[in-house]
Length: 231
Image 1 (cartoon, helix red, strand yellow):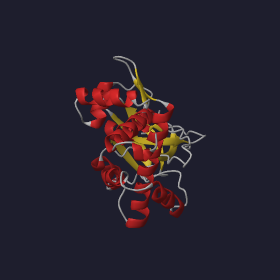
Image 2 (image 1 turned 30 degrees about the horizontal axis):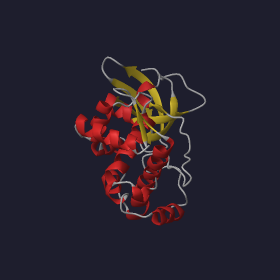
Image 3 (image 1 turned 90 degrees about the vertical axis):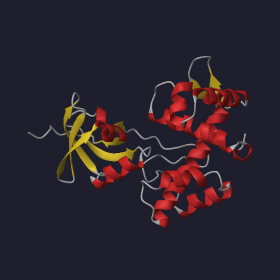
Image 4 (image 1 turned 120 degrees about the vertical axis):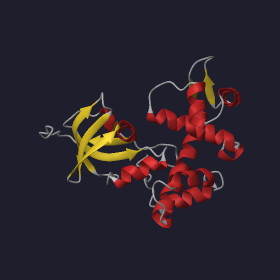
C-alpha cells in the first residue's frame, strides 16, 4: 500500500508505532499506544483492528501490536518524511530543534514523494535529523545507532550525545540551555538512583541531571572509559 492510499490517521498510527518500538524493546499494547496517541483505548483498538485488516499490523488478542512488512515500509516512509522536514526547517529556515516537531507533523502529510526526494538531495542526504534520530533512506533502510540512554550509564562512562528525545519541547530547551547538543562529549561522574539524579561533566562543567533529562539523552560511548573523577 503506497503512501497516497493511506489516510492521515493511518499514517500517524503507523509512524507512532514504529517510533515507539524504535525507543524500546518492550511490547506495544493497545493501552500503551493510546498513551502515545492521546486517544482513548477504544478508539485505538478500532484503529488497530482496521490496520490489521488492511495487512499493515498484526495484533494478538489482548497482546502486543507489531508492524507487518507492508506496515513497516509505510511507517518508515513517514518517518523519513518527518525527519527530513525537521532537518530542512532547522538548516534552511532557522528553526530551533524544539520548534520543528509539530511543524513537521503537519507538513509531512502534504508534501509529495518528489518533494521528499528533493529535500533529501538539497540537504545532502543526511543520515540524522536535528535530534540525532536516524533518517531512513529512500529504499527504507536506515543507519543503526548503537547508543544507550544516559540514565543507564555507569560512572566512568564517556561518550558523545548522539540522540535526544523530541517528545517535550520544554525539555529540549532545558537540555540546550545546559549546552548539551549533539556530539557534545560527556562523562558520567556519579549516579544517585534513589535521588533520581545523575552527575555528568560536559564542556568543563559539572551538571546534575534529573531522571527525565537523563532518560531523554542517548550517548555513543567511547571505546575507552575513564575512572570517575574524585568528588
